[in-house]
Length: 548
Image (cartoon, rainbow, N blue to C red; front, top):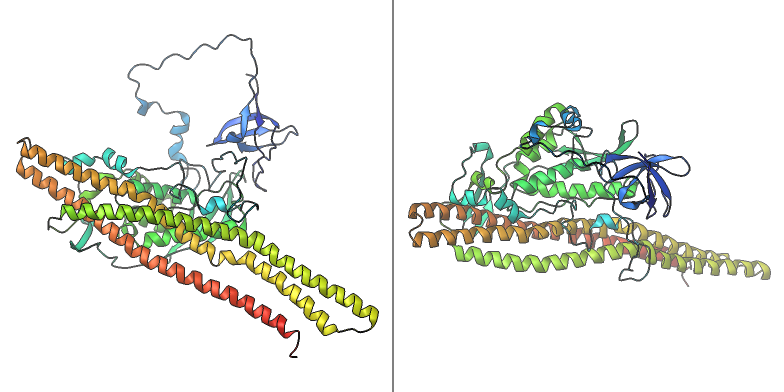
C-alpha cells in the first residue's frame, strides 16, 4: 500500500511537552496512523519528527494511479445481528479502566480536542484593530450556541417526542417509580415551585492539576470537587463534566441545564486559562447545587461522590440505561391535584418566550461588551497608560541631564516627574490585571444564563406540543372516538407537564434576580476598588511635588 501524503492547510503549534507535532502551511507530511482519536492523525514531517496533528488542518495529496479499481468488499449477510458482531475494539471496551479511556469523546482530557481550522480573517472589535484575545473561544461571547460542547445541540421537543412523549400523555407507558425517584411540585396556581432543597450544600471546585498517562502520550487537567455534605474529594476531568451534561440534558425535558465552559483548542495548559476554566466550572457546579431537582438527582450525586473506579462503572451504566428520561421522567413528578388553568399556562408560556428572547439579546450584547472591555484593558488601555508613563519619565530624564549640566539641580522635581511616569506605567499594569476581577466574573455569570436562555425555546415548545395533544384528545372525545374517562387522564397528565413548566419558570426568575444582583454588586465593588487604587497612586505622585 502506498504512503498517504497530506499537505498542511494551516499553521498548527503543538503543545510543549505533549505528543503534538507543530506544522506549517504548505508542509508535506506522511500519515502513519489515522486511528489516534477523534479528529487527530499521526504523521512524520520532513525532518523525521513524529507526532499528532489535526486532521482538519491538512488535505490529502491525490496521487494519480494507473492501477485498476479495487474489487469491492462482499455484501453483508442478510439479517446480520449487529449486536453479536463486535470488532476487537468493542470487545475490549469493557476492559478499559474508567479513569483512562472509557469515554466517547477524546477531547479536553486524555487527548487533544477535536480541532477546527482557524479563521483566516479576523474583524476588529468595537474598539478598533488589536489582536484577538486567546481566551475569547472560551468566553462564549457573541457566539450563537448554548455555551457548552458544540456537537451536542439537543432539541428538547424532539427528545420529548422520541422518549415516548405521546405514550406518556395517553397513559400507555408504565414504569416503576420508587419513592426515592419522586420529585414534588408544590404551591397553588399563583405560586408554583419545586419543593425546596431540604439540606442545601455547596461543592467546591479546586486544585486543577495537569496529569499524563500512556507514558506522556496523553495529557489532561484534573479538577478536584469537594461537596460540603461529606467533605470527600473526587477528581474529574472536563470530559467527565461533558458526559454528565449530556446525561442531564437527556433526562430533564423541561429543565435548562447550565452550560459548561466552551472547549479550548489551544493554550489549554496555560496557567491563566486553567484558572479561568476552574472558575467557569465552579459557576456550573454552583448552578446545579442551587436547583431543587438537579441537585438531588442520582446521576449528579454519583458524579460528585464516587471516588472509586470500580463503583463508578456500575453507576455510569445505570445512568446511561435510566428509563426515567425525557417524557418518561414526568411519571416521577408529584404535582397538586387541582386542575390548572390552561389559558393562564399559555399566557405564561407566551410571556416567558418574549422575555427570554429580549433577555437573550441583552445578555449576548453585554457578553460582547465584556469581552471587548477585557481586550481593551489588556491591550489599548494598558499601552496608552504606559505610553503616558514613558512620556513623563522621559521628561524627568531630560530634566536630570540639564540640571547636572547647569549645576541648578532640583532633584525633588526631577524625582517627582519620574515618579509620575512610573505611576502611570503601574496604572497600565493594573488595567491588564483588572478584568479577571470584574469583567471576567461577570462574563462567567452571563455565560451561564446565555446557555440557560438558549434552552428555553425548546422547553416552551415541549409544553405547547403537550397542550396541542390535549386539544386533539378533546376533539376525539367530542367525536365519540375517545372515552371521557380517558380524556380526564390526559388532562391530568398535561397538567403535570404544565405544573413542572411553571415551577421551572419561577425558579429561573428567582435565580435571575439573585444571581444578577450578586454579580452586579461584585462587579461594581471591584470597579470601585480599581479606580480607588488609581486615585491613591496618583495622590502619592502628587505628594512628591510638595506643598507650595
